[in-house]
Image: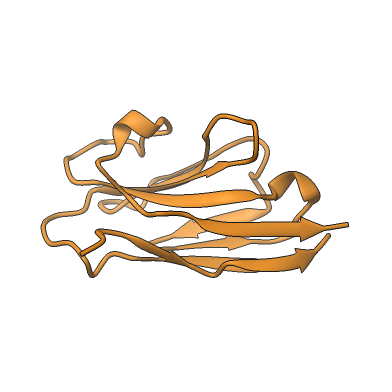
Length: 120
């Protein structure tokens, strides 16, 4: 069973909004943080946003701060631009961290990714 499953894939126009969800029912055990990363064609996977389960501390990449909002199991994306086009991955950390990790190595479980395309 796949540990994490993303949903919310879509094609939106510039300035539009989209909400991604991460289904964690495929795994058991504790959750301490969830992160969202994205990877555009020909580019490395990059951090988008993260949240801790205890305390709800959040962290955002500069490129999305003020436009994206992370909550448990979802990522609300507003004012989308073509630069936001990528495959988006949710990731989960099962050990305590006072701050949400902003690098892929900070997470253990990963989803398979969901495509987000922003058309101009």
